Length: 371
Image: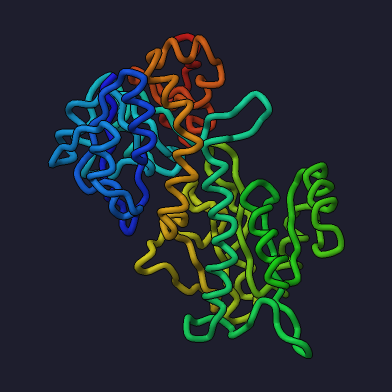
């Protein structure tokens, strides 16, 4: 199969979909790999490394898109890339379609086979292609939140750990999945007072076993959220429903009850965000203020640490990508039924139920009836 990888064009996105070691794996399996020149530079991978691994370098992204049967990316394509789609193309990347109707329209119109990292669900219920970025985003959320609590950034001027004789900062984490757990790990490690909420009692019991008396666990209800955020210095939104728009559990009305200069970090922004006042921001202008509360809602948080993020992501995506390239998408699904869950669009049909449920204009079609 002809496999391609292009430079990401999203604002301040430096990750890349393939590292040179990945190229070597695809080439050794008999595939041709085409890389846009400079695609990996932002993550610290040179064109020479890709050449030595067996890739063919092309001058422009269009050349790579045109020749590729399978395109491996990191982020969802932007509007400038829509004209480069072609029928039958396998697009293997994060798609986040529930928050992006224009992209959904284009994938359906061009009959692209959209294989989304974020909806691939293993038999044990894990989401292996989302997990590495969830881990990084969770850890970054506390790092960034701590920074924007500084007065120079509009925060209230609070140190998360405090010092002897001063109160520690209060951190409230909404959602106890992979993102929330990793946020919790860093917040506890930095010495903050941490409250974590989830609707799943078993998950809360698990978190209580891990962190013990260092955290407070609460069932996620409107009443508990409202009480907790009143005293919070930092609130982190970590809610996820795979493929579906995030529920708006952090209400606008809470902001006026919160401390002036408190910080809200919405890690769920890729799926539309879990805050009513959430809007996508970028690394070059990451924050805005609503009712005195600093909002950090960067849509590609792991892009801030592209070297770590790229290695972590490609470690996870390689084995599934090789299955697709080796067998073709249809045979890969037949041999490994887990692959069905990753297909969001196929032959002009929307095949992810959670994405379809986020819109009123699309009809869901079971992928197993098409493949």
